[in-house]
Length: 251
Image 1 (cartoon, rainbow, N blue to C red):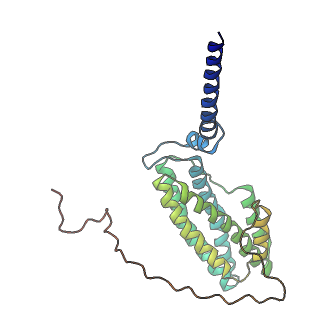
Image 2 (spheres, one colour; image 1 turned 90 degrees about the horizontal axis):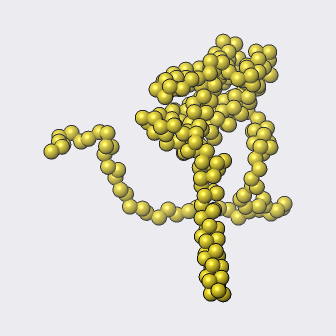
Image 3 (spheres, rainbow, N blue to C red; image 1 turned 30 degrees about the vertical axis):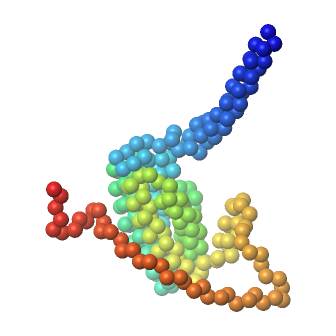
């Protein structure tokens, strides 16, 4: 009797041990609410790869950006302010005319519905531009648009890194080129308040900063020594698969 009781206790202990080992796998991979479970639940299959909820949100955001930044650029060109702001406006018009055509093409192929007007916040920014005059207008134009582009820039990078959909990846490439061009031309106005951008970013960041501590007062840091690059072997890239070499036939 004691032998049977001891055997039963061993079996129960082994069962509990196996369950304890398997539980974390279930709880952190398949449990509803985890990132991986949400990715699976929010993705739909397409000819160009899975389309996630984040992909669909990105497509909508690209469309929304054009709905307010294109008229903002047209306004800057029409009001004929300083040359730098007018040039920035021209870049906005050209870039978002192209990008809007691209996002509508992608949405049509993926059968996604796009918004037809800017958000309330974006309409508020356009209203601020319309009501401002002179230097105030140019300062608002450069800073509001620069902040907006900076936030979109990080979103484009995240989507370009994580998307599994070919159409979305190509759209992210186009958006990256356009947004970076607009950031550069807005900064070229000389009106961007980088301190305000840094403070705004810090207010929404929870991670602790990393990197070396600041130098103590009164000390002079040693000069940085140039790094001598080590020679590396050169490996030529193979020809692209989509462009077969002429004269080569498949047998």
